[in-house]
Length: 95
Image (cartoon, rainbow, N blue to C red; front, side, top):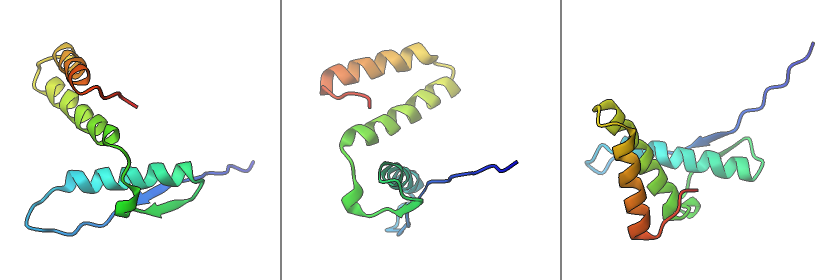
């Protein structure tokens, strides 16, 4: 029996400018992984030309906020309502 495994990876480098913003490192590696998948590549290294629209960054921020709200016991409904209000105000979409 033969099993084929396929992996797609995104790589990002981190240059410290005095701030420890590892969240951006994770964000940029996720962007590179998504672009690699779209281009049918095994991996890509992030560069600033890969930046996709603000929706992706906003989605990542909201995921973080929802997780934080759940962890703090505020509940998913509060986070969801805040998300809906923000989307209405900014005209942004998820996706």
